[in-house]
Length: 140
Length: 364
Ligand code: SF4
Ligand SMILES: [Zn+2]
Ligand SMILES: [Zn+2]
Image 1: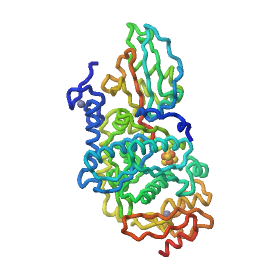
Image 2 (image 1 turned 180 degrees about the horizontal axis):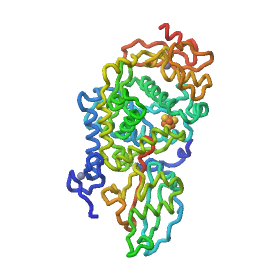
Image 3 (image 1 turned 90 degrees about the vertical axis):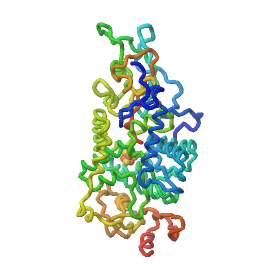
Image 4 (image 1 turned 45 degrees about the horizontal axis):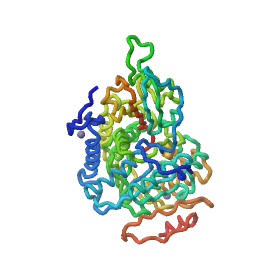
């Protein structure tokens, strides 16, 4: 039996996990906030959080520019996905990434918009962007 | 990139790119087109529902059935279908998998105000999937599970005296099944698996109102509406063959989104030749439990007999002929009874686990 019964009702999130974890402790490597970093809020739905230390929500700080790119290239979704694979993904990389992008069947929303409308991998990140990854591959 | 305006209302910002049409739509227009398309699937031709029908939604707590419950409640009101809706859930008895999703279904019951019935393999068959896997191993467990689930839904529907079961199978699921049937050489099933509604004589009508709804849109809908669902994967590694089919389909869809609808269309276009159809067996009822079957014993009774006899995977090859007497001490499935509104005379309830039961059943 789950422990949820003793906990207060939490709002549903439409992402297919029970938001019962109180406050996510910072996990994995995140570079420290500063003028050279962007704060990005992440959420993993549809079971994907299982690949990210079981934590659905993360706030991370990524470099404003792709390291050692010259001329300095603004960090984009391609860089974010690479960064996630190197720093936050805790297991089974093939369940998340494929090539430069994400595995087919994983939906991506940037500030609540389908990333297919935002340029996908080419989208340039901005401070405080919210990026949501949802797997559609798990049972219905 | 500047925000794209919605291609339907031309005012709000587009948030979804529709896979089927490539249309870029805002949140409200997305809800509108999604719901309207499901409504169109429902009323197309003669329509799948009849006024006053009692309809059970096969609810797993997952995204598809949750969105289906939400949309059906909404459409039933909006278009006044006059349906009596129920939630019907099956508990396979898989530790750590169903617990959370059944909690979710219970939450849906409250949110949508629909009566809920949960039926467990344990109660029906005397076996949980945990025990079945412990005995037969992890290779063919899904075959047992599939046969048992199908019957469990029908039995649950009969107990609710429901005329119709709707399930959350979406366009991607149906395309995947078409591929699977082709890869297995099971061409006879192609047109059946693509039908919105299937009903053979004496079986409960089943429909898939999401036949044309893409998985992507279902997930987006659940996300934007903040619906309560639970994503999980069965711990008994699902069918690897099916897994490959799914990945293949997702790869195709990434290149050309219409692939899903195209595959469904291909499935629909296979028409069986007369001679093939004649070769298919006529339906009768299982001599042991009364469930519809093309043999003396239904699949579930045959599988159960194998399990009770302590067989491993070879239980799958258990014969379905002339096996009328249940071996001493074996568990049997409660008699399948269809409670139709006063039409047939109800048979006296038969005690569970009685070995005389099948004999009585034949005598009746
Ligand atoms: S994956 Fe197989 S065993 Fe698990 S619930 Fe599905 S059919 Fe049953
Ligand atoms: Zn619009
Ligand atoms: Zn039977």
